[in-house]
Image 1 (cartoon, rainbow, N blue to C red):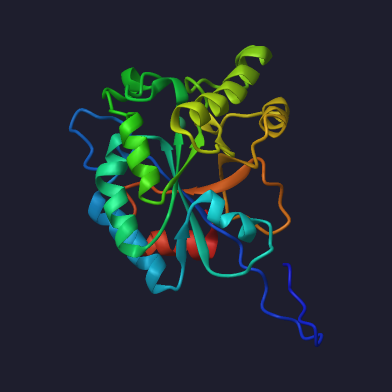
Image 2 (cartoon, rainbow, N blue to C red; image 1 turned 120 degrees about the vertical axis):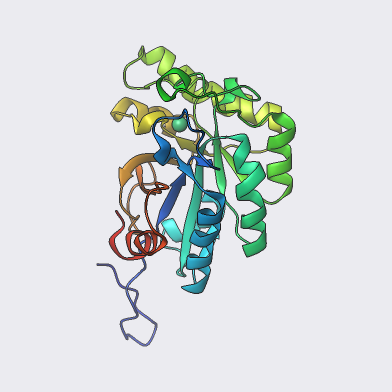
Length: 249
Ligand SMILES: [Zn+2]
């Protein structure tokens, strides 16, 4: 475990590992939907934020969390991330985040803006609306941030290398041009990646890349292939607290 040394030589408390929380849909799962764990009830999401606040944690975006990931700053922060860019994030997560004064990063699928989850809608049995450009602008105007989740949400390690690089590079360019903000954070679709994917995100100019590997981030760890903590709607708030803050699983 890493420690910080004050100028007078005393050993300070160990650097806190930083939890990066993953969410998908904030809403009530439709009856027809399978994989219902991808949904979190809006009330439960609010409870998660309340648990964080009560324990002295601030919920932050990847941008705001970066100094803590790098070990440059030390404080109780939890990075909040949303995958895919669902419209319900705007509807239900945003008001709760604002109430607590928290920020968050939402990873957008650049070629599916304003469309639906075409990559897994058949598997899940539900078409889930994604934020359109106006929605993304509203998200950003409220102090939230965005990252890239590729162009079309493929398994990046399974497609042609040139295509993989295209997904990584062009999604950044496209989002930056259409939305008008820097896009410096990447999220691997399905968490799927290999060394070539990691290298592609780095050379494309991203600053971080997150996966679905479980755990908290310890200072000094590589900022590419960052682990996160998933949040299934099936778990209790107490379990959320223990997993996020104690176990990192
Ligand atoms: Zn995704």
